[in-house]
Amino acid sequence: MKQLITLNINDQNYDVIVTPMDLLVDVIRKKIGLTGTKKGCGQGDCGACTVLIDGKPELSCLKLAISCVGKKITTIEGIANEDGTLHPIQEAFLDNGAVQCGFCTPGMILSAKALVDRNPNPTEKEIKTAISGNTCRCTGYIKIIAAIESYANLVAEKGDK
Ligand code: FES
Ligand code: FES
Figure 1 (cartoon, protein in one colour):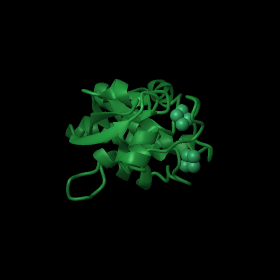
Figure 2 (cartoon, helix red, strand yellow):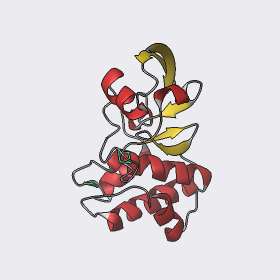
Figure 3 (cartoon, helix red, strand yellow):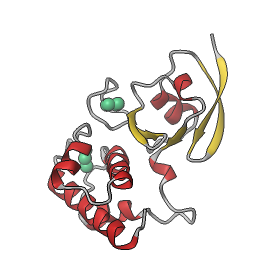
Figure 4 (cartoon, protein in one colour):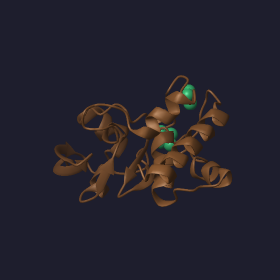
């Protein structure tokens, strides 16, 4: 049975009609039109669909949309600055050549941002653990880790989240 729910995404409320089985990733992409969140495997293996729910990285292909009512969802579109300029972590990915095809990038960035938000001085091992659920099929891990380290350094220097 369809029902009207309200999802808070990137600090904006969206009223959407869903079925109890509608997945968050599909609602975000198809009903709300925020296509920055990617759908790869659709079964919890690749991390492309990662969004932040109440600040924690979650796989939106494994979440029912109705289970996210009342929570604060952040997608990649939600981290850019209001004037449309990129968030410093996005800049760090570009500056370090950490974006190839870009399919993994939104999920990778959100996993990394959540890490640095809670731990501004992550070790390389902690970075690897934080992105262990995000697969880069272009295999650019060395540059991705360098980008995350450079963003963490920036945060440590400036307190810039
Ligand atoms: S699409 Fe969700 S983990 Fe692959
Ligand atoms: S940049 Fe292509 S999947 Fe990571």
